[in-house]
Image (cartoon, rainbow, N blue to C red; front, side, top):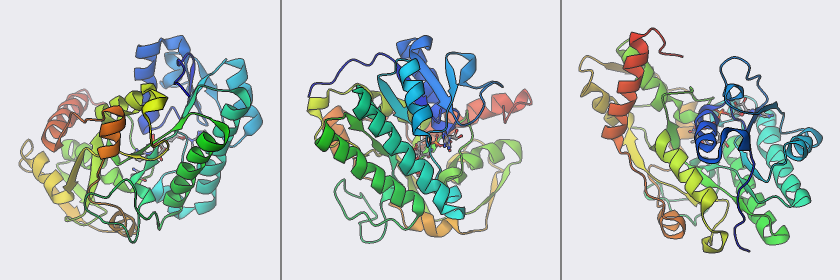
Length: 327
Ligand code: NAD
Ligand code: AKB
């Protein structure tokens, strides 16, 4: 099956941490009118609805989802609507419903309507007990301990099933923790790696909910956006994997992150009060082997910890000076 041309994209979960920036970039690339943003949230106050078409959509409602795809003449779904790990642990059943029913709806609609592509991110949360923590391989045992991880393994298997069984072009990458300065993260375990920058700029103090030596894989948003679009646009025939690409970028402990911030803000202090998210972090890889993504669609990140820290602090300090740190 050769990859088809992407004509009109629907982004679900467009008002979230990744959706807000990916929607903007897709609109730059394909044109504002060709990228329809959607979320269960209203977007009237400063969201993606201001720069292009917007639909309020609950992805667990198959009929409503299909109606948006039909009326907006969508051929590609970038499916970002989800409940993340920390929120999912507080209330597992809604996480299953949004993450699994929402994805099945996207895949079924793609099958029924002959869509060009469905892209749905997976996560390092698919890993758990029994796999190597360092340089975690693409192919390894997937035994997650969180409901979020269970939904992400299910999503990868469903995506691969729809490719094999129905010829749907379904793709996905296992993002590490994503760090960004535009939209705050939405309830994940890696949220501390974003919060720490905001608090460094705002108060020069941060209380972290995981321990100083917790090491996790992370990625800066510009690399996340680049990688996502590169995978969307990769020729289908080049792909041996589909819904489960490991993508690595950088990997650091909280202590190393705090040290990199201190090179710009020497008086910055961090206290540690680990909570239930420590166990989640401890179940995930410390670093990732992403050789399949590098080989199959030329994945290559641009940022490391130092260049990301300089950029994050520059953006947040300028906003703070205008009294608009949180937008
Ligand atoms: P987010 O929580 O910031 O945004 C998710 C969006 O989905 C929110 O705007 C929310 O309103 C929306 N949503 C929730 N339920 C919905 C429903 N029923 N119908 C429609 N919309 C609904 O999440 P994100 O960080 O932008 O994540 C996007 C994708 O990337 C998810 O699949 C997530 O699992 C994956 N991912 C994110 C990270 C990260 O660090 N941000 C890491 C790994 C994987
Ligand atoms: C989370 O912490 O839940 C997300 C993820 C790594 O999937 N950031």
